[in-house]
Image (cartoon, rainbow over all chains, first blue to last red; front, side):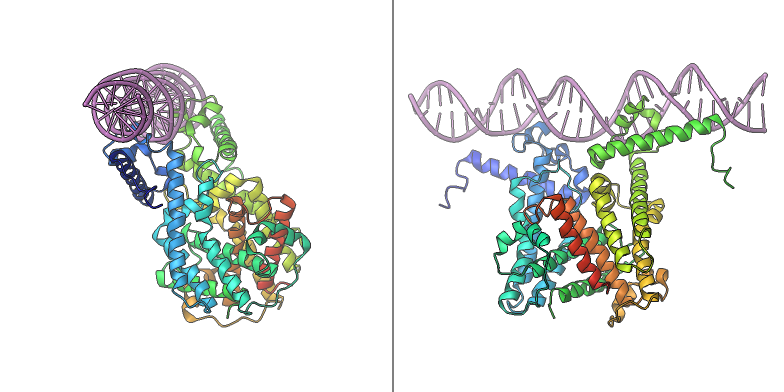
Length: 236
Length: 236
DNA sequence: TCCTGAACGCGAGCACTGCTCACGTTAAGG
DNA sequence: CCTTAACGTGAGCAGTGCTCGCGTTCAGGA
């Protein structure tokens, strides 16, 4: 069971090690210079290899970017899950705010990673299959809060939603089953949009001359906005 | 007055023409391949020039991107202004929804342009001075609606806002004067974030397996979300 | 135990990019 | 008319992604 995916031979060991080194160097380059400047040759140089050697491990530059995307999704997902699980299960608003704050904090600490996953898609559009699972970690946390909120009977009375809009949510309701009202689901998606929109506005410089730059004030602003969003979800 | 900025000599004429050709070809390349693939050499080729010749007109690639950014801001700004002005001045919710729809429609028609201005910042971070005025056109429309709403006495009763959050809004209130309550301003910023967040989610593929792909359903979903946002602004 | 084939690292090379520079040409204005 | 600045050219530098043929090294079957 556990032995199957653990490297045994020296070669497999070496390969795994080189692989993780490539990823690590790639991450540091991404963090320093951003995705646009990520260069396989530069990564190879840092590793003391010739550039063509990395192609034994990584098919092309986009594949490396994809790995970094997956890593980014996983780190923000882990950060969010940890922050959210630190709150009591019945503290719905606390869990929600913790989630929002964790996303923003992670984004501010890793702006290039954030831009990579929530900014303009860098590789040729089609998100590889492997990215979708990590990408769902944060949304899953949010949806879980909505489910818990509903099963605790604390969800606001759902307002009616047109049949067409209900139909548009089909892929989503396949996940949530009937555990969350369509109305609350829509509000949840809106809050997801507001969260990412607000963080993107801040990180991408669109709050310049709009909201004071001072970090404490920026945090206060963000907190206020997220509390407002929480209120829209029926969270006290 | 008008004669000063109109080209007179043949040389100035030619220069202006080449300049606009560069921009036009740049725009078509951006629309086709995206910002990352924009190449000065390719633009030069399309123009029948040698690559170094374009440097007589454009200092570097980033400058060309900046021009495209400005152009993008202006086209989305114009589209929004036109859509919004088609509504009656007292139809606040109609103006708001028209604005939202215009942004989304423009974004769907010009995804790479949208990504350029509202996605990850491509050039070396610092947004040049020339971009800020065009960038404000859409937000100005939104704020104007809020001002009109307030002066029509139709704004919802403002809820109290902490002193710290008020302080964070200093740059913004410098623009609006006292014409809009701090609470409404914050809600307006949230709706701006939700609008961009929702459009970004859709355009950048984050609604995959979340909201049905069918264009009509996507539009219905977006409309519902924006109506919800409008309700949060006190718009019927 | 040997030996075959796969994995590996290397260096050269292709096509492309941004950008610079010295060079003739051309046109504008004193 | 003639100087000066703007223009377009082509060569060239440094960097990129990616490919390919070459020896080497190692793992596992005969």
